[in-house]
Image 1: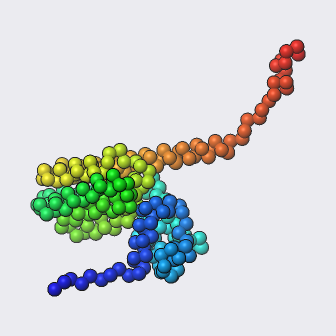
Image 2: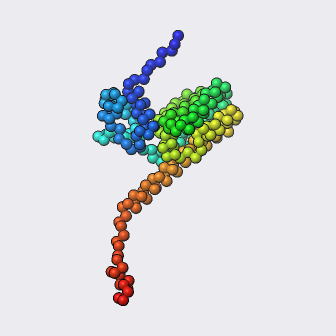
Image 3: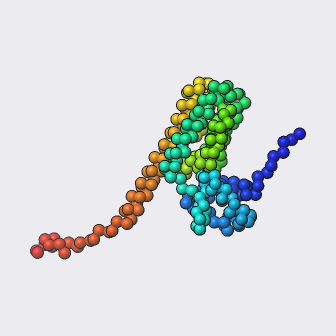
Length: 252
């Protein structure tokens, strides 16, 4: 007998479409998400769009709803990014450690990880950012999901949307210093080696490095923007013509 799966609600499907549009770069951080425009483009009612935006807002990552102003694409701050990646590093590294200790990484799991690695490499070459973010998320979900620690996985799941926003911003800011295909291949190699402490450390370092590079890049961009703003507001120096300065004209 085939297992019957419930289709997503119209609101959930609309929310997913909006999220994918953000990840594709159709909307930049800070852009307004106008109900009327989205309703027309997606062929659903404004009420459905409103509920979808509220759902994304509740997930706490991609959309911010401001009373009396509307919905906007979230602008991730450096402080928030640091909170997300440091917490991820703690949770995911521990999940990997106990998964190895429990012998959870079977050959079937490694085969699935290898397939995801191949997809990540393919998407890097194609420059498909939205799909690359999803593949990255799938990789980490599989690597941690076999740890058989329900409460830990619940906490990791609660960070899902914010983790997606974090990974998206690493692509948006082009902060990664090493391609995903290389860093994730190193992770799989360490998981295959079967040493819990070493695997815990490589996951922790992978997440910390990516997060640190992102925050450094975000702060550099912010500083450059502030410097440019200050420069634009600086009054132009008053031009003093030589004829008005004593001694500048020969014979005076």
